[in-house]
Image 1 (tube, rainbow, N blue to C red):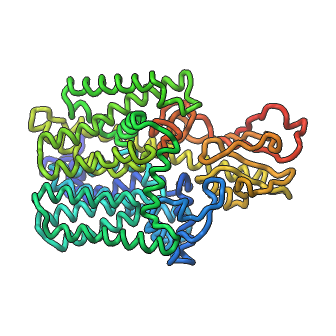
Image 2: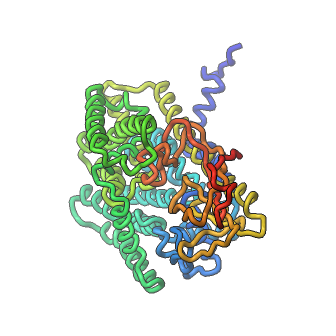
Image 3: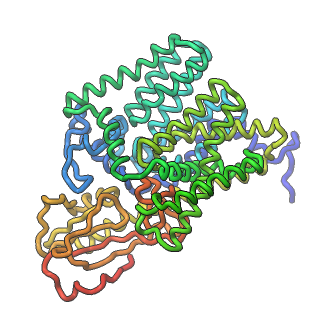
Length: 575
């Protein structure tokens, strides 16, 4: 029987929809909790251990956050050389863990307010920039790069939270000519920079916006000095502590890393476009309502020609030794598809400036192009470096759809729900794949230690990220190259799908077992075999890849003279 209508003519479902629509902030809060809640038990992985180690050290040495040594590249090095992020997130984790403990759910819960602050801040900013602030906030939430980054305990989402609210206060302060709002924004800019050095990019971004808005210097210039003075003090203080200012050291590290991998800027441009399109995939789902057919065809033709030229020349994929045959073709197809989306993202910023030609459109365009140019020319392409684009892209998407409505290209509410749902499904699918990967890495450490770390001989390992965190937690020892002395009968475990690993000397390390652990099955964020490198394009030119994902593996070697039982092929063993 049909639902009985209310006196207003609305069904109970319509009433609930209207109730939530009248409470946008509550609705967004509930959606954020629903989206991220299932991932609170995610094991620590990728660079999480760097933040956890520093947080533990801060609990006993709060005035010296990086005053200890760690092994992250196969050698013991000072922590201030290993980490290229300021310590504000580590201080936050240290305080939280002192009260609520170091478990995975506890620390992921600690990072949840930052994700919520980004979404609510995007909504608040979008209220001034467009007529669909809920769409802009939801689009930001369901970008794959935002959901994946929000399931780590790294500094990226926290930095973005400070970033978004700094922009909110700055825009409000400029339009109200209110010095207090601008001062508050200056403080938030400093906090963003102390969370992640990229936060300092807010200084030129908001200065440019202010000059375009007012056409002159004003009182706002004094507020811009707040983060500049704070960063100068930080540089001086860290130089006094470690003999090297960490702000300038991070810049030198970025330049050196770019040269180390030897990737040309042209190849980086295509990789960055693919990462932009994939990480901000919401845009490609709305493409039919964003562009005319001939514009979309132009984007596609341009990307295909550009990508084909790079593929034929061969400089882009030659560094990925495992991408050959059918797997290479599949990767190339995915690169082209997501690169078209990347061009569409950049096109939104260009089109908005062309149409509006005001301070707001320039702010959004600079906001989008800043991270993109950074990964092309200054850093290795990775998803988290493109994360700051997400709120600006969400707002640009909403603005573009509004313009389309005024020009007769109106999107129906049903079509909008379909696009949002499809985008959310993709983002959750990618986030779940990263979640399953982290689980497989933890299982690989636990099973390896259970099998080979219980006897009188020692269990050593090579490799870092989450594998290192759990192996050390269970008593295994990380190899320090040229220093560690592995004894006869000791075991050495190496996870191939990891960073900073080296093959052992075949004269002393002999294959024993290959343990397999099922991770994600059809989508992955990190796999050199599939060309997926969300956390660093040294693994692959895609932020995530589709296909049959190989299981995570750990190769176990035994140290000592070659034994007949160890000279044959290593037999994989599935766990």
